[in-house]
Length: 177
Length: 445
Image 1 (cartoon, rainbow over the protein chains, first blue to last red):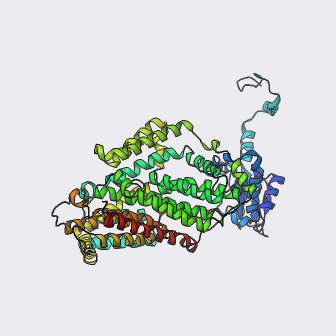
Image 2: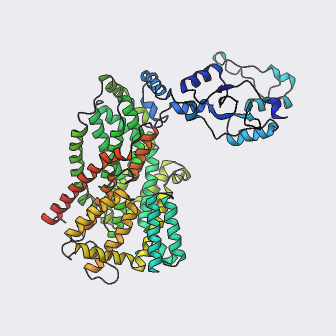
Image 3: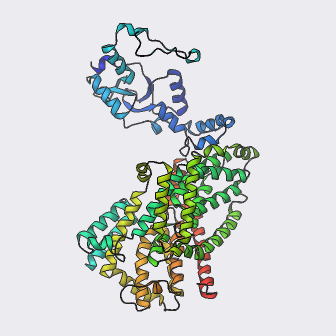
């Protein structure tokens, strides 16, 4: 299967002048896999993931252990202070510029291998001129793999609300559907 | 051979100072050239006590790094720092003094860089909570780590090297350097009170933030903390007694490190991977390069020059000790104090040969001659305290400058000098008075 046939084309975009606040709000509102920083010609300059935003807001010195010393009542105040510290940072200052990408003519297993090798969630798909054409998420590859192997009966899978889950009521994978 | 060894020595030091290539690469390349050109034979480089690698220094460093690596995992430093800030009731200057004291004490028994690496993040958090510029706190910690590290045999690599070469034990350092450092630290803090006492003001609300912090949460592994504190205490006790039982310091440290590795339950490959191998190999490379210069007579030549300038007498080396103190301090502010001391050690040993007319290997009787002892202490004081003279004078300074910059508070070269140079001159001046009064007026050798 060619990448051009499984890629998504509805993406979240930003330009290099966008600041942390705009990107944070966009990420929260649109819930994209990642935000693509492009110019007017859709040429891709960088990528921003949720992880990059978390990292830019977290003070460089802080680790999970050290932050335990800040009590709950003060943590919102502390977090807000740290957001304010970086709120005007431009996308160009924290976007990833050293990214890997796919071409529309690559096939699904190349994408799978790249996602595994680089331990990332999604890959941009670029044309010859570096123009952004789409995105392939690992979910897309998994869906494609599932379509190849899953039976129609398994469409009965559903989410379980753990709040109401009773002991012993979990369906075992060995039981027949 | 003479010129080849001299060329390797000069080129290696020039590239190390330029910082264009990592110092470990340079030292190892230099060592390889010394061996390839047969200035030193491999047997001499690895097994000769006078010319080769000083394994006492190497194993002492590795063992202490292992102990520190295990201790780092307990969170004890962060705990102590937050607890101290609360004891100071959020008063910034009091916090600064307590953090400087903890850093100095930590650096006296552990590695300076590790102490600063562990304390700087919590210092940044405290400064954040107080809404204060963290730079004065961070620079104070770097300076305190260099001062504190001077106090003991294991506090700073130059002391480890001097102890090994001059056959000095842990208690010699406690007896001769610790009093000097206690005086220096107290005077420095009094001066700091005038500099920062009035400048550091915070609101009551910010102080309350500090008081609300929960330090108990910072201890990651209480069991491991108990084990590592027990082993560290026993190791320090071992250092105190090593002269009495005739063990080398490295034997004591290796015993401590191996016991801690055994009882900690930590994976050895993880703990060993965190040993600063680049530093260890830097030492190994340097020892071989210096060994080459000793063998070909370069060090002997330099020692003749030093004798011509300072005219040391078998029973009085006052001028030499003063020259060594100031020269070491200024040199260590500019270049790494490790290669400096690595060069000065054999040079002083050669001077012992010449002043006391020793042929063959110098014995402890000559190396530790009462007239010679102030010179060793002057070298230790100068080389360790000189590190405060510039942002590149000591590894702890480099770490602090880097961390502060990442946090959005860049410390310019000039800003560091503004704090570091006066402290360096103050501490060396006090050291000078200490050496003069103690050894040349009171005669307490």
